[in-house]
Length: 320
Image 1 (cartoon, helix red, strand yellow):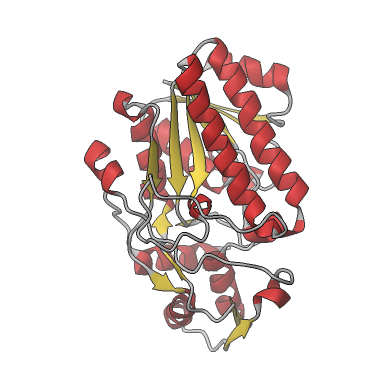
Image 2 (image 1 turned 180 degrees about the vertical axis):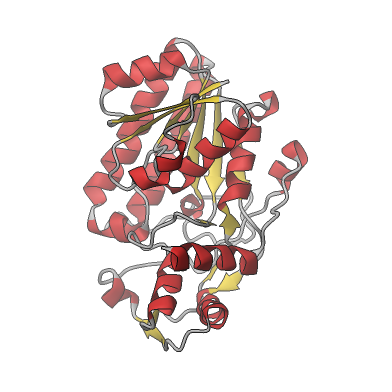
């Protein structure tokens, strides 16, 4: 197939590009490099089936042309990372909602399949873990900018599913849980690359909050493999899928594991949320996926567990 990946020079997008090329597909990417990096795709530029354009989805004539050339759109372009979201809430909302709107509009002209990358953030403060795809979305007040990202991605989902219901545009929603691996940057608040870089440099490993909050980490290779399978599975159309690893760990335990695997002498220090982000910051206490739906449809099982993920990320930063 011919696949367009918006945000294709990002962490997940570059790994998805690699996989699709390995599978024999032709790949077109569109990225404005606001959070992506040309270094992520440098090794792909010579591939005859790889094409990249440095521009934004806001360039509608260009987007329309790229959508028209392809069979499927993987819409990954979005504002990412808690730090960026808190610091730039206007950018977050406009980027996420407007970008999805124009992708769906142009894909609808010729009914091109669109796979929307959403996020586990949409579950918000729902305490009923593991999260199933039909669980309630429990967000905080509009005065807490932290929830702008979750809200904007929920709007993306509503809009995509509305296009399916009303206009019969084939769409698939993938809610990604914490996705990690080589090439991910800690610049926007991603916890594992941040911890690894701090540990390797001998700097304090900074745990935000009290460290009892839990997360479930999924290797990027497992995530993009699931995305590729969903794109060619007709039974996925019009549905929402969690993509994640049900194994849960506290952030404090994660810091200790990173310290041990790197052999670091770094101290582990806790920083109040108010100091790390902003006054009144709220966090999700737990984030655990129920992946039953994905497993039943495509046989999904995570193949890389946390210690191996950490070892690969550590090796990546040591080489750099």
